[in-house]
Image (cartoon, rainbow, N blue to C red; front, side, top):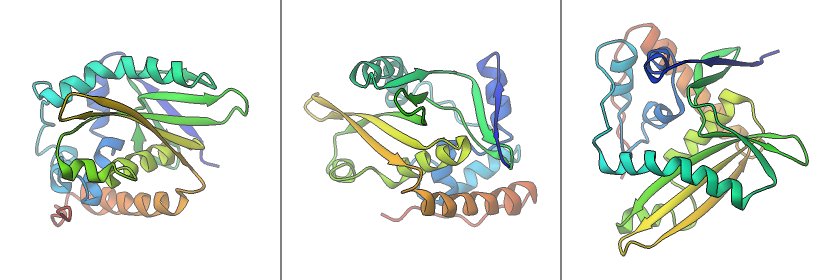
Amino acid sequence: MPHLVRSTHPTREAWLAARKNIIGASECAAVLGISPFMRNVDVWAEKTGRAQAKDLSGNAAVSYGVRMEPAMRCMFQAEHPEFAMEYHQFDIIAQSDLPWLAATLDAELTDIETGEKGVLEIKTVQAISSAVWNMWKNAVPTYYYAQVCHQLQATGFGFGILYAKLVYKDGDSSLRAYRFSREDAAEDMAYITRKEKEFWENNVLADKRPALILPSL
C-alpha cells in the first residue's frame, strides 16, 4: 500500500535542490497549462536543468505574501481552534508510489475531534482588478484549486483548506476560508495526477520539450 514519505531539509538551499527532482504544488497549474504565472515549458526547462528558477524575492506581491504567511497561520489558528497545526518549513511530502509528485505545506492540520489530517494553503491576493475579483466572487481560481488537489494527492490527507487574504483597491481586505474534501475532489485529483504523470514521464524523464499550453482568457 502507498504510504507517506517525508524528507526534511536543513536549509532553504537544500530544499531548493531537492525540489528539482519533483513537481511541487506551486508548479501543478503550470504543468496543466492553467497558470497565469508560469508556463509548462518553463517547468520543463527547470526540471531538465536548462533554466534556473526565477528569483522572485524582489517582487512586491511575492514579498508581501512571504511576510504575511506567519501572521496568517496565527490568524487561522485563532479563528479555528478545532484544528491542531504543525509547520515544517523545509519538509517535502509525497506518496511512496508517486515520489515525484510532492508538496511543502504552509501548514499541516489535524481535526482535534476526529483525528483527520488536512492541508492548509495560504494565499494573499491583490484583488484590485475586476478580472481578479470575478475569479473570487463565488469560487476560487482554478489554478489555486488545482494546487490544493495536488497537495491532497501528495499527502494522502482527507481535506484541504485554502485560506486567502484578499486586498482590495481601496486598501481594505477580507479573510476567506474554503474547505475541500478529498472525496469531493477525487475526480479532479485523478485527472491532475494523470496529466502530471504524463508530463513527468514523457517530457522530464524523456528530456522532450512539451507543446506549449497557454491558459484560456
